[in-house]
Every structure is written in C-alpha cells, then in structure tokens.
Amino acid sequence: DAGVIQSPRHEVTEMGQEVTLRCKPISGHDYLFWYRQTMMRGLELLIYFNNNVPIDDSGMPEDRFSAKMPNASFSTLKIQPSEPRDSAVYFCASSPGVVGETQYFGPGTRLLVL
Amino acid sequence: AQSVAQPEDQVNVAEGNPLTVKCTYSVSGNPYLFWYVQYPNRGLQFLLKYITGDNLVKGSYGFEAEFNKSQTSFHLKKPSALVSDSALYFCAVRRDTGRRALTFGSGTRLQVQP
Image (cartoon, rainbow over all chains, first blue to last red):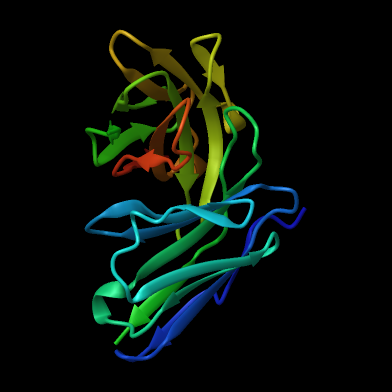
C-alpha cells in the first residue's frame, strides 16, 4: 500500500489567497483525520471523519477553514482567505475502524502564507 | 478532557547506552496510548501502542514501552541507542471509547551521540 498521500508537499501563498490541501487515505480505512503542527501549539486535531461524515470539527480554528470528504478516497482542507498565522505543517492521517486502531500519517503539507 | 505531558524537551544519550523518553497522561476512563517518531521533514511514524493486556509493549526498531496505570505513565525505552534513533518522539493518548482523535504531547527530541 502507498500509505496516506498528501498534496501538495509544499505550498507558498500570499495572504488572502485560497489554499486547498488534499489527502488520499489508505484504502479501506474508515477514519480520516486532519492535524496541524506548529512550534507554538504542537500537534492539534482540526477535524475528523468517519465513513466520509464529519464527526468532530471542534478543532477547526474559524470559519476560514473548511474540510470535505466527498468519497472514501479523497478529502480536502480549504483555507479561504489564508493568513500568515495559518503557516504550519498540515497532516492527514487515516485509520481502520477496529478496536485500538492505529492512525497512519501522511508526509504532511508545509504551508507558508506570506 | 485528556492530556499528555512529555517533561523533557530533549534527551541526550550516548550510542550503545539505554534510553528512556518519558510520558505521563491524563484521561477519563481507560487509555489507549501511542508512541510516534518524526524524522526531519517527514510525517509521524507509528512505533508502538498499548491497548490492553501486557503492560510491556514491544514495537518497531527495538523500542518498547511500559504502561503504568498507578503512575499514569507510558515511558518509551530502548536497551541500546543508535545514532539513527535521533529524532522527535511524540506520545499520544485517547480514551478507549468515544472520540477517536489523539491528543499529543509536545514532543521530545532524542539526540544520540556517537
């Protein structure tokens, strides 16, 4: 299996622009998670899905952030408009729906908003 | 609420010596505990987990961890450190029921000197 795939790996954009991050989970996994990693806040959950349905979006910073999962093999995280404080590494992870499941992480997208 | 504490920002150890990376947690109910490792510019790689059963858990690359319920700890250990073990290590926790998202510690940088 190719593992969790994220694109792009790096994104540089200017403040105010729309940014779309993409994730392909491991085939057969029922859960998909979006995390953000910064020096100040560490690793924090943004949102997670179960069978394509958002279950917990309490970590989404504000209305500028939105996430979708139109099917079992694709998810997007969109920031509109982007701000410099959104600069971070965004990770996607997926896990199977079994007891004590392990989350498997993608390589991340490093976002820099100028 | 759940939380993880990794009290050491950095651990230094000589190659060949045993290493310990500390982790304590707080969660209501039974914990699921995980260790991940992150190499520079890479995603998080799963090392090992405790779900239930034997308190001593063995994982990848010779790492092991001991679950101690009374001390609410889950320290990561390795009998003989390698220079290639140098990386950032994260402890994570979630409850055995309910919300699936992991809560991560702040990370501990392990530096193994030749």
